[in-house]
Image 1 (cartoon, one colour):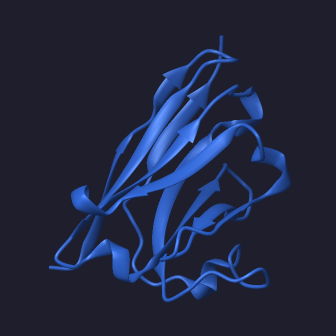
Image 2: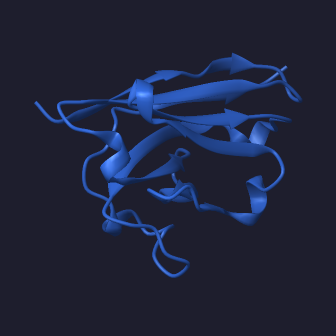
Length: 125
């Protein structure tokens, strides 16, 4: 069965850090670009970052310098490190696969196929 299994997330205070993991099951993750998205209540799904098969990275401006995407092909896993978290980062976070990420397409959910189940990140004191 082809799926992405997410882990990590939870409750953290403002300024804190979390790491989200996205592990592939049933396929090889390094054949795909992987994107991270989030969705807050009442808002549209927002593209945060994408990493290509050759390790090019894209970030939305609001997370540049705070979030870092990486991949460990040996573990068939992609990570999103979240630092300097703010209350407005509170959302459900998703990973997803795409055939590629480009400057024009990486943040568009429609470009992505298989999605993880989502993990809640709550930033509150």
